[in-house]
Image (cartoon, rainbow, N blue to C red; front, side):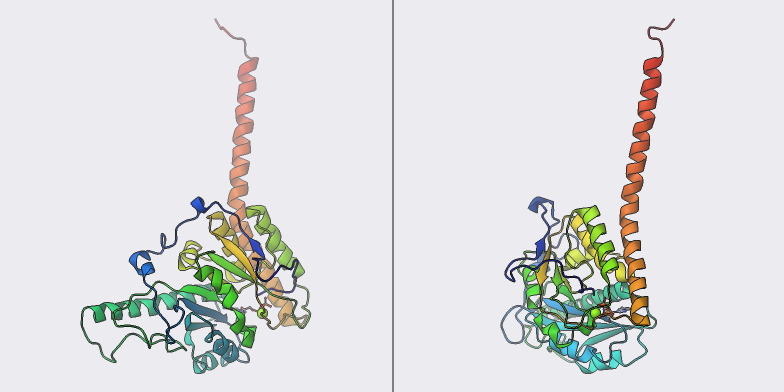
Length: 346
Ligand SMILES: Nc1nc2c(ncn2[C@@H]2O[C@H](COP(=O)(O)OP(=O)(O)O)[C@@H](O)[C@H]2O)c(=O)[nH]1
Ligand SMILES: [Mg+2]
């Protein structure tokens, strides 16, 4: 979401920043999501090219002016055969425009925040996959079904070329903001390290935006400092909402931190659990939050949510440390009292 404070630049071929966790510590892919045998199976997309293994999830609120372009651009990405838009209780035509552009659309009847929309989007992807798996099982059992063939979802015809009975691995989740418009088509390098098994979560680092932002700096600093304190990771754009995650990593991070605290929470929780996080420079451009009242309110809400996310993660650690120090102090006092008493008693 926040890309106004780009701190360091890196060669495009290099990760902007990578977490360093010993390989042995990292939970294995599939361990938490029960992928099992399914992770063995990859299917070819309709063009017969790269395996379609990515679902795009776009949380959207009042984005009728931008959502169609963003959906259309996301659908062109390599490996993407499903684009899900979660309309978070918008009172405009966001849902209709998204559906017309070819997305699977899920709606919240009222505004529930960005994190809730991301969870809903991931659940929708899983539901699509469950239907497809059931149909694949049916096909393997030689049964026919009404409508015939494998399930067909999403803008790219989802499964048109799928062999009957094919079993697919859970798709990686590529979260994109709704206001990227046609630059969503540049997301390939963001998904690549996850698709290649080299990272569990990637975070996009955006170039300086065409229009200057209205000063998000204090929220960015709050998040960046919190991430550094808790994990040691120096996040370039800690609030960037453009991220690709394996399903296992996403599930490990549930439940997500509330609202706009979601990005901070994801980074802290995944690093703490030993997952590999990598920043990637991507040529994304979005609507920059300005200085009007709506933007100020947005910033204030973001600040509160990031602070809550960090508090929920730091407070237990701080309390445990305070308890440890208190116990240590009490033990020292007791030792001193014992040492002061005459020995060898009567
Ligand atoms: N689900 C949900 N998404 C929201 C809400 N507000 C904004 N978004 C989405 O979150 C993304 C980032 O929001 P944006 O206003 O661009 O924030 P910024 O990039 O940090 O300036 C966009 O996709 C928005 O549509 C909300 O209340 N709920
Ligand atoms: Mg934005």
